[in-house]
Every structure is written in C-alpha cells, then in structure tokens.
Length: 414
Image (cartoon, rainbow, N blue to C red; front, top):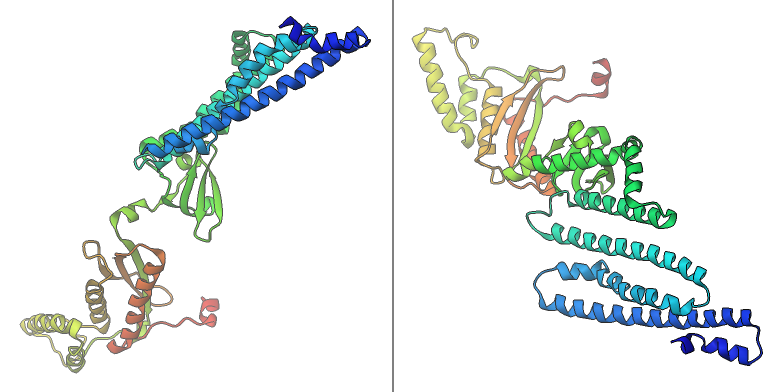
C-alpha cells in the first residue's frame, strides 16, 4: 500500500519536482481517484438496492416497500457503504498530511450524522404514508406523531453535530440543554401545545381527517385535509385553504358535521313567511273546496267532524265564525306541507319531520320546514330543498294565503 499511495510522489521526485509539490500533487491525485471510486460505488449500490426493493415490492401485497421507494429510503441507505469505505481510505489519501486527515475525518463524521438523520427521516415518512393508507388510521393525526419523533431526531442530530464540532461530551451538552429548558419551552411552546392537542383530539375523537368542520373565528368551513403539530388545514368549499392552530381545537369552539354524515341525513331548516292579513278562519264552503286537495282530504274530514261535534256539544253560535272552534287556512297549509314532506321520496323517514310555526317577526309569520334530506351531497341537497320550496311557494295561494314580500322601503323603515 505504501508504494501505491506514494506512486505519484515517487514519479514526481524522479522527474525532478520538489518534495513539497510532489506531496501535494500526490494527495490531490489520490483524492480525485478515490472520489471517483466512491461515486461509482455509490451509484452502483443505489441501482442494486433500488432494483432489489422494487422487485420485492412487486411480489408483496403490502404497500410499505412501495413507500420506501417513494421516499428514497434505498437511495439514502446506499450512502452508508461508500461512507465506510471513505473512512478506510482516509489514511491512504492523507498519508503525508495527518492534520488534513483529522479534518476530513471530522467532515465525514458530520456527513455520517446527516446521512443517518436523512435515512431516519425517509423511514418516518414511509411509516406516515403507510399508516395513512390503513382504514383504521387514515383519519387520525399521524402527521403530529411523526413530527414529534422527527423533532426529537433533529435535536439529537444537532446535539451530535455540536459534540463533534466542539469536543464537548454528549452528557454535558444535554445537561446544559436542561438548564436552558425554560427558553426551550418558550421557543417550542406552539409545538408542545400542538402535540398535546393532537393527542387529545385523537383520544377524544374530536376531529378526524375528512371531517367537515366550521370555525367562524378562523373563517374555516370545509373538510379537514391535514392535522399536524402546528396547524390543522381545512379546505373550504370555495377551494381555499384555512390554517387553524392545532391547540385551537381544544381551546376554541367549532362545529363538526360528522354527526350529520354518520346519521345518513342532512338537515333542512328553512321557512316561508306568511302575510298576517291573509290568515283567516275557514267557512264551511271553503273547507269543502279544500277537501279537493287530496293530501288534506282525510285530515279535513276527521278534523271537521271533531270540531262540529265540539261546537254542537257546547252550543256554540256558528253564525259568527269566531265562536267555538274553527279551522284556519294557515293550519290546513301547515298540515298539507307536513304530509307533502312525509311523502317526499328524498326525505329520510326515520328522522325528525316537522312543519312548525315560529315566533312572529316584523315581517310576518314564519312557517318552518324541519326535515332531513337522504342525500348529503351538497349539490343534490340544494336541489332537493329547492324542489320542496318551489312546491310550497306555489301551493300557498291555494289556501287563500300570501307570502310576505319585503321591499327595500320596508327594510329601511324597520
């Protein structure tokens, strides 16, 4: 080996060059030769390892090895052997320059720490992608846990960098770090809060990836697409992205629509406002005319018989409609809408169906439809709701009622 690593040196000395120049040129040539060797070895190893894992991934059912390739784990692993070879070759290249050798050895150690951190990083990313593919884990905040492990990894990596550069013992470094814990807690406050929040969110099952949440404070209204240590990303319905601090999920109020999704129905809660002056008692002739509307025929027959029996027993003077009990056009409309909703094919029959009169407002009497659409998809839901209210609005005049029309003047005066 001594003859090999001094071959250029001996050749230059024989050629009449100075000893100092011969040593430097000898080192430079050896460095170039070994750099080329290391590059070729690294290149070949990357190809071999990548092909082996690729072939293995084709034969296996799991996607884990596919993710290893995707996140370049084989490529990062291939750097280890050339690094070991480089350590072995240092004494050969820098045989005449021990100080250079110690400096290069330090650089290689630092590079070794960096490569190790990069390998761990790629493996963690592989686990993250693999876990997100599992049905029972894909809606959990996997990013938060992976980020915590990566954070500790980077702290340990930086510690090794510091130890190698300064020569301070690792234990002493962490002792010093412990003394500065108050500052570290301040620096990593959001990270710590985010980690605690991620754990609580996962344990309490507060939010999952894919949930539709509404958080007015942050302008969020859409699906959760990512939960990590620092933030929760929500893709709003207009395709914008809103970022919410993770700890806000346990400190602030928000609405999670998962219950609606799990129920299989989407709530319809909307009103038509009836003009007060159009509400009235129904005369017997008007009742008979309304009996032609099939959805309320049976109701009117039963109800009218009950009312007539009550008025007769209590000797009410029906020459004036106000005396005794009476049917109203508003009440009959309410019953009509209720039966219409109950018979609608796109309304869930096993959930609440109700038509109710709300508290009067300055604009009139609200008549609210409360039911659940069996189709939760936004576009279909809006179509179902529009179909229902198209019918209701068109039906109102058949009962001698009017829908309140609010003009700009009315709004200003109120």
